[in-house]
Length: 336
Image (cartoon, rainbow, N blue to C red; front, side, top):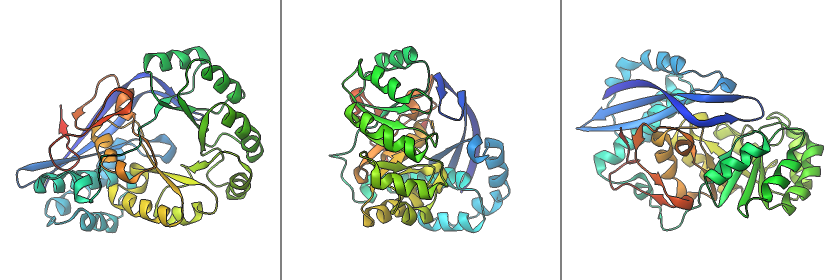
């Protein structure tokens, strides 16, 4: 296979803030895998919380470049096992795994959702994320992008008051994401107030390691609780079954589509709701997420919508969340 590695710096439409960080730009790695006249593309963004940079991913992949280029590619799942054996980070593996799936589907000239025997006739609409900001700017962002479902980033001393004010400006569904900023008692206290304000669920209110607190919350909260930072890899799903009502899978964190498919299956066995989220990826990463849509209860795939300029074409999200799938195979990605 021919391997290409490219760094891009994605500029955001607005400063994006959560409880622990803010940024105006997002570094991302685009991987290309070429074989039989086709090229598959994958993506993984940098992330300071997990101490991952584009440069560190490139260094990892370059260390096994020769082995990748000489690899006898057959199935993405087998290639993923090969990458795990090379002890690459999950972020680097994700970019390669997404590229391998896109390549595989392009060679067969079939989209991934079709290869997985799923039907795109019905799928959950993505939420649109409103980062932490002044209430005035948060309202302005909602007016700029009218949407049926908003995910609201929280983690301030006035979180319930923020939702009350935002509710005055829209009838859309709210989801809230505290990114580990609350305590168990705060979550239990806030939940009834948030439910009355039209909030659908709370995502990762407590620190990732606070399993005792999460067990208390999941039994006392009147709103469903979705794991994010507490559910990184496949082994986390089983434990989340006792502490959450659902999980949010991030492809970059778990290592790509291959483990994500197994996580979805395991979560459903445990009766958990399943969500897949993004990490401000371009259309390269978003198009891969979209292939999973028929298998999901919720999805957060607005990353490319938050960018000033995209770097690829593929799956398109139209007005009010309608998804337009490309006709070409794999994840349907072409670089601009």
